[in-house]
Amino acid sequence: MVMPDPELPVPAEQPTTEDADTAAVNALRSAVMRLSRRLKHQRVDESLSPTEMSVLGTLARCGSATPSELARKEHVQPPSMTRIVALLEGKGLVRLDPHPEDRRQKVVTQTEQAESMLAASREKRNVWLQKLAGELDEDEWARLRAAAPVLEKLAHL
Image (tube, rainbow, N blue to C red):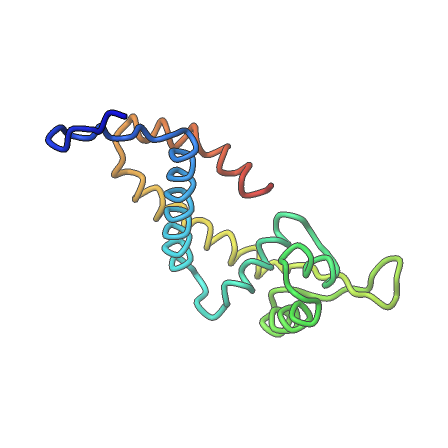
């Protein structure tokens, strides 16, 4: 058996595709989390919790829903969603209507006040993000535009 010469440098191992994928996933997770935290600070109404904002966003995207449906979509327990809906109703951001087929249930619908607040919040966040992205060079902007649909797909898987 031939022993390596301790005087010669040891060649660096080439990273595997798996290592590169792991590093990319780690960098993506970290960047998305940091960016998400920074975006959350760009709110119009500071009195709403992130969970309340998320519920309003779900109603804006998906339309009216029962509290049970909202709980599933938001990954919270139904009693928690009942409390969130009650808070939002108290703030005039949602209304509860009778379910068209099941009199025991209610349907949660966002109000015009919620729609206006969400639109203003989206605008504030878009302006902030566009200003931030303005610091990118043209090649980085092109890559970001190309990555946006992929990130959107990941967000909805």
